[in-house]
Length: 151
Image (cartoon, rainbow, N blue to C red; front, side, top):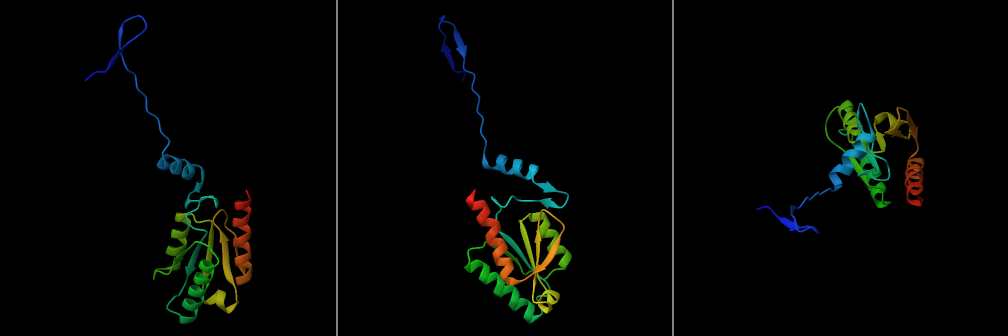
């Protein structure tokens, strides 16, 4: 069926209809296009699906597993959205997946970090990793997301 209307001059004309939308998938695609590197997405902290990506290495070690799970529970209790990678795969695979997912902060617990009484803290945007205390991790996450919430 062709829809027509009569214009001011009495002539029959066809309707011209245009439909434009900016859906969530287009917005997400634009964000990824603007916020990525060769390793994957770099979600802006303001819209990241999680606040932190917690990597537990050598989880067959009971002390490592207990520390990682305790940190996971504490972060959740404090309102931090954490993706906890407790898979039994190689460390490199976990780190690659963390980069690919693009969560703003990666936290790593391993035998080495426990020996030093620290947690490895890495921002997705850069290459620098640093060992920091449990208390400092909580403070840095709180500061990072408080700055965002303040606007």
